[in-house]
Length: 485
Image 1 (cartoon, rainbow, N blue to C red):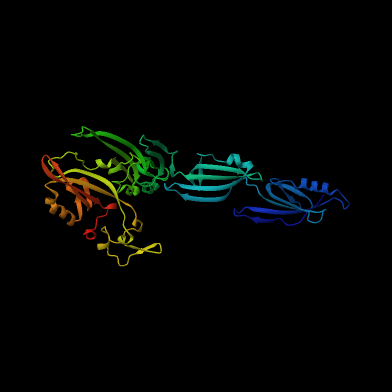
Image 2: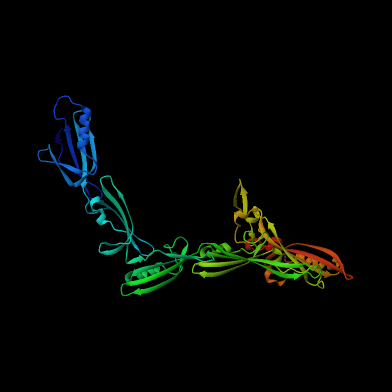
């Protein structure tokens, strides 16, 4: 084969400031006589070599070369164009990275003031073994000690390696991995220990104050305790404990107690109560507001309702909520079926009823299937509830739960002799805000729903049996007396 070098050594520079050489050779057969073109092609392929070989550097005569093993071939292109007796061969080569060449770099500071550096290096296979650090090694970076946190490597076609390195500044460094525990109440906690240089301690503690998010522990963990002890004059060891503050059910307890034995039927009446405990983040505590009276069937028994809700702060930023559930007839005092001298209320009961308010009552008017504010709406006379403005539009024609309390009492005499007493209840003070019959458990905003009477004879005397129903305002609102009177 006849060789001819075609150009001065051209070059290019990449983003890592690494120089790439470009060299072009022309190859022709030894003589001009006819030859086997397939054999010529095979000779050229054998001469060309492969990626990773030393580069062929021309001598001064331009027709011979020597191998420079300080450079490595990274790309080869051979083209015969339209002349079967001529090949043009282009080589791209670069200096071997016997010393690691950094081709990428990023730095960041995480929540615990740990400075992290991510870097990418290219290094030749000949130098890899002696240079490659291991996880846990100390790496000196710009005069400071760093901890090797993670490392990965992949081999490139030209026989060199791409190494990705993650290191952390040891002036603020987590010592090992966090420990964790789960209690029988399903409380999850994690504890971790840091070494913090003296110049970083104030900022570290500020970012890890009690009640702050603990990002090192995971989502929804908050710092609940910390301990700080000095390490000579260098800095401090800081131990942080974080607790998971997401909504979770801790336990449910059921109690069954004797309420009373009916004086007439001798029937045993029991009171069943469920007590549930939840842990909840402070910002989600409002989920449990207004729960009293709501259905508790999901965590107690079908038909039970929430009778009470208590909040207790368990950790900074976290609360423990305790709810009790009872059958509706046991939420308020229940009285026996027998007459007790026919004075005062002898029976009471509670039931769930539902109210629907029209668009105009809510302060809206329907227009082509959409609701618009009722411009001439008078909240004082047209709305059943006391409001400062229109009710939320989603309450229009919505079934709203109300508690209706039935009070049964007896008055001596025929119904017609008690007419004034009965008529006054229907015409005076249709709305009452307070506790029915002075019972604290029946506190709220009540409106008179209806009244029925019947005649009874007992022990030779005539009595008027009065059944009155009071309906509690829904959703914590108060009834508007001007609407009902």
